[in-house]
Length: 153
Image 1: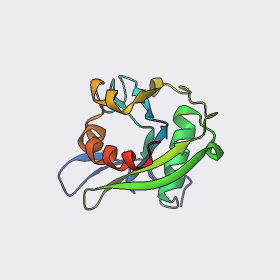
Image 2: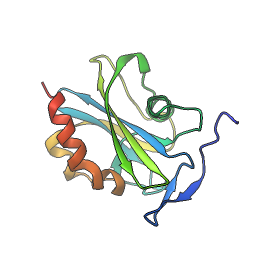
Image 3: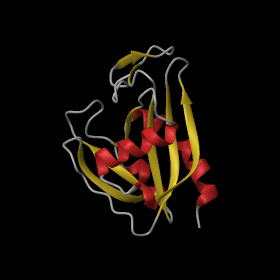
Image 4: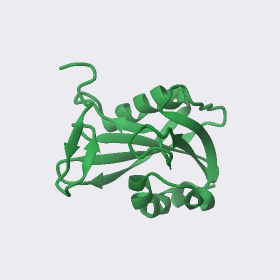
């Protein structure tokens, strides 16, 4: 088993092509009534859209481990400043995407640390749909937003 054995494309039972042979995970950070979104670079799959940091899970990673690793790699967060609250499952049969909903400490800092991101910023919940969203994030946003409301101040 290699340290990074999750990279690769897979066709799910729904007929769509997804990145992550063992599924994928991302982290949705909430602070107050805002969430942290990542503007994806044009060259990446579904580029020039907004979504959450995430990517392929490796076979040995838990959902939370995979989501946190991806966030560290993509936006440079400090995992100790993140409190996982709940996980939302987008199940496609033989492939799934898990969104880890987590509270960010007030002093958590995020920034673009590689060429996969153009920008990261805090966005008020009511303004999220004003951005061009990653198609998969857009498809689940209303369900995820409903979960988020239980964690608002």
